[in-house]
Length: 174
Image (tube, rainbow, N blue to C red; front, top):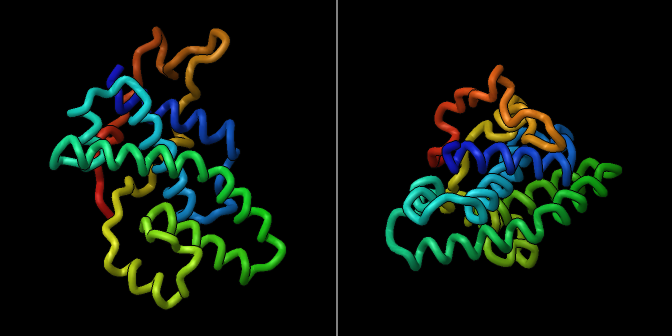
């Protein structure tokens, strides 16, 4: 199986097991969290350096790829806690929106030390930030059949043939 398609399936399975459905976060944050899980699955999976570089949009050199992998590992370490913090803020709609935006600033826009910056400063940095996400990834993950566990098939197709995953293995910049 293509390493990018396998990473997508692993990411979807891990995301749903760890956090459940993300519909309560809104589409932009749900996509960002899905992208964090997907990049982690790519970085820790069977993809070789060239496949990984193309999938992540890191085309320059090995140093850039190593730096990107470091960011991926750090984001994966904290994403579950950040989502939990957002969910704990549900009781206060204003706080909930601020927590969603802070989480997006940290994970999607990669604003360094976002929690220590004012909303105005983060807004300026957000406008200048380049994002590297696959738009609609969360919905695509939900549409995938689950990974094989305890005898269940890897694919929804008869005979174990893989379903067409389209462009899931490619990098899309939004």
